[in-house]
Amino acid sequence: MLRKLLILLVCLFSFALNMIAEASGTEITALHWGVSKENVFRVVLDCTGPTDAQAVLNDDSLMVSVGGGLKPYVSKDYKVKSDTVDHVELQATGEKTLLQLPLTRKLASSDYKIFVLKKDPVTKRPDRIVIDIASSNLNFTPVSGTEAIIPSTPTKPTFEIGGGIKGKMITLDPGHGGTDPGAIGKQGTKEKDITLKISMKVRDYLLDKGAQVSMTRTNDKDVYGPDATDAQELQSRVDVAQTNDADLFVSIHCNASTNPNVGGISSYFFPKTDYDKIAAAAIQDDLTKKFALDDLGVRQANFYVNKRSSMPTVLIETAFISNQKEEKLLRSNWFQNKMAKAIADGIEDYFAATGGDQ
Image (cartoon, rainbow, N blue to C red):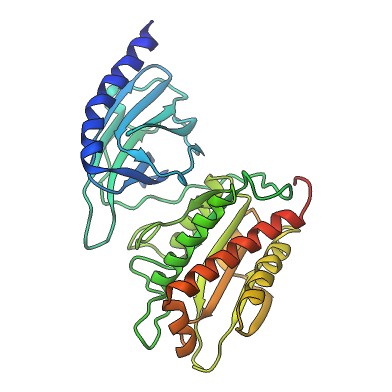
């Protein structure tokens, strides 16, 4: 009876929040989680516009109703590392989204805090809903809303291979972003902008093929935060793939050289599984078949994201932004579309070529 009453209260909260969401068209574009320096478990929801949230606490869960829909590519279930929260679930219902946090211990009302962070034009961070929950051995003091989250320690997923692309989880990582522009071409083209545009198009092609997609970023932002070390930023990207139990992790970049005449396409892997090289070869094959650019081959490298992820991972260098002809191609919408389709087709070919489960 009590549980039914709590659910009714959530529904009443949601009705009010729907009025806000309908007016603003707000949608949730990403969920991040981590542990702060003070050992506070934090969940952050990135939103397309301002919204609000209300919570109902019972003995075994914290339910947060957020005014706004849920982008279809956002994962709905997250395994987390916490002594208080068992996992995190998102459930979209019309113009609202219910965030459910099953608890491993009973919370007091003073053990959690929910607050809103407005869109920041300086750091280019979107509107966000933040939920902080104290650990079991901590007297709760809410952390600063601007403090970076420490990347979670990833749990090794069991990745799937073969059987086709439908239902497979693929994490896409648009290289660089936020305070890191990546390589910059002579026309002022920033790598971070091109990789994001191509990655978003790859996402759409993959969704059309029936895959599930998680993104390390969907706008021009640092994944970890503007003051992160290189290792922190790269690990936060790996964490997205680990948290979403990705079957394949694909990081998309533009190449650069001090020699402006160098050009071409390459795909990089690190042989931590039996399938990293197979995935890189499948993607490289589709790319080189569709473009009259130099085939620089499938190469082994010790890139952070390739080594530190537990699932097959491919880092793609789409073309040379330092080559004026290729920079011009990278800037064009038709090239971005063709590149994105080739990457998506290569991913599909990889899942078709491999067989069985790990």
